Image (cartoon, rainbow, N blue to C red; front, side, top):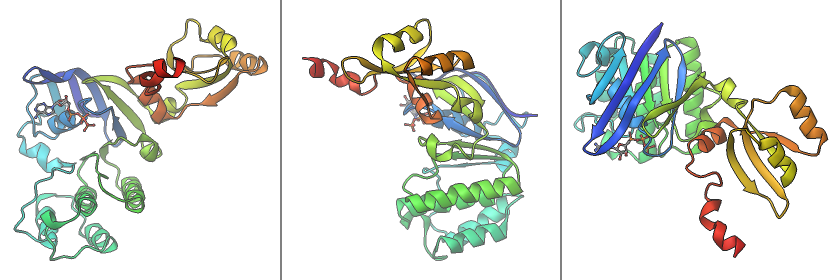
Length: 303
Ligand SMILES: Nc1ncnc2c1ncn2[C@@H]1O[C@H](COP(=O)(O)OP(=O)(O)OP(=O)(O)O)[C@@H](O)[C@H]1O
């Protein structure tokens, strides 16, 4: 069953089109990574799903309802991000108590265990927390709420590496024990890909790709070797990235629609094949140039 249906969703801010005819659907009880470059429209889209922003046009349905300003949708979903506005007059322990009153499926024990594990002071106030601690507290709300739709928009901002790992682990363990629909936006696909079932790649306000992460891992292949040979195999193929590795050596990343026989033949002819991480695939697919940052320096290097 689809919990989210988005059709031709557009959101404009004056002349800026943050979302352009975005369409996708999300199945119940899956973890989907929301991936995209800066300014792609991820936050705008997630805020529309949570009912905080009204679309300019198009259709959005969450739990079969229009999410905008919808009490049912807000009781069944939570959006965790670094702009969460929590009452400054309440202490952290009072905030947890308030959350337990609002969210039907709130897990008191989990909230308290995570709170203690991350060494929070119950009398501390949210607005006085450091950036990383604020993010950590917000993720406790996200996990313990056990909302059927849980949205994390770049939840690890400011967290150190150990806390990020702990959060991902806690998310996975809790999800396995209590499956629900989770959307997780991040700029670090390499860190979260093992958690994900699907990836939704947004580029310039539109859906670029929506597929199981396992498929994304084999989406592309890297070819390195003599330039003439690499060029021969690249002919007529979709080239995602290309880099000169010296006067006669070339590295290209191609969409991997080669047969097993072709890949074997390439190897025999002296081409080195390599896998391309799903994170790199997303970067290449959404890049405006084939050579990446190297293109900025290309004329200087050859002059
Ligand atoms: N309130 C706003 N007013 C005007 N423009 C906005 C507003 N919010 C977002 N935008 C614009 O909409 C586009 C999409 O922004 P959005 O924050 O959704 O992208 P994002 O993918 O979350 O980016 P990032 O990865 O950098 O957080 C950007 O061009 C942004 O400048």
